[in-house]
Length: 246
Length: 304
Image 1 (cartoon, chains in turn cyan, brown):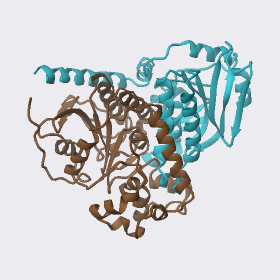
Image 2 (cartoon, chains in turn cyan, green):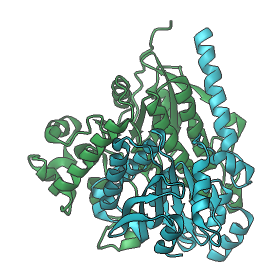
Image 3 (tube, chains in turn purple, yellow):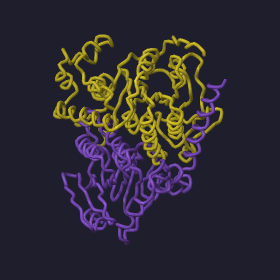
């Protein structure tokens, strides 16, 4: 599906979206008539300091505007831009800042939805899609931390061995199914059905806690994360009470 | 009430293990670990790769006192799998941050990490995302989350993004803070873009002095546990929170950085633009002289 097809399918009532390089930004009308903010990084481009600051600036404007309309961020990116210039200027701060503005928007009452419709990897994935309140994907999306050939170099294992191991566990290999099973992606939409009602269904759900580790446990892709985190919370709470009453 | 016990152990932060760092940082004898190595909560994934596990999965989390104040702490062990985030490793930090929010207690994160552990890459990546959300939720509840960077493995990849969510960052000269590591940039873009064996280039592009000078870190300290301790005590005195005003100020700060330095080729040019006398001497300056030279640095002023 092209970006234009996706936007047309999501917003049959119309949208006004500007393109600036690999970034898009604008507004659309939901099927119920309400407004939704739309932004994104497209065309499989890397996310560097210049892109992150523009997207974050737009998100801050939205939060400052005071309306609490939902925010959709469309993602088809590469990884973070790997360059001397980006690192010299402090890329980690720019990517974190973008993620923080998304987390701020969610906390301030905007429903933030990520729609992964292409690739995304590593720092770019963390700073965009993974910083939203709910992340959905279209079939064919391909999230990755690192591609298998690079992983083979780093782990010093032949790629055939890695492929065989990937059959046994969803925990390391790139791909949409693995990211669903580990709980990172809430749901994969049906590309053959109208998109607008599928977006409306996500927006109808109340905003809540981060439930990705619960999803990962329920789907069998990440069996330990929820249990370990919960145990640390319980131990910290118990030791706090001991310290107060001891 | 117990009086604060002074900790006066002299220790190189860079050389120390995670446990040594915690012991030297907090009030003497005050640390109590959650899910310690005796429980053997190891990674369930490393055996698939025939790799050895560690009983604490490379991270120590627990509670202690800093100058008498109750704090929660996490310390990564850079000597195990490069301090990388796997499923168990990451979940211990996520839980600690969720507890911090619930209990309104400050958190110190002692970073020492190459980023996501590739053998469990999806779980590690999601752990990073969960930790960043938990940091922001804790900060919005008034909790300080302070990052300390000066370990062997640096603070790379997803670790650097977590550091960017902290309310304060303390760094030493040895601390390196960067998303892509030198080898990753060289592999992807060629040796003309970045020569990973040029150590001077690595330090002046990613090292603690440069990060302090551009406002990427709030405090610059000696490679000494006591210096990190004193700086952490100061960092906990104010709670800036994380609302739209804070992030709008960070937006302005990061835009200004791009305007001032966006066209330069090398860190030395940035230091020159900052008005530093003899900028090429910055890497050689000892802490006192460096801090005096850093007078005109870009400061974050709680805009993070």
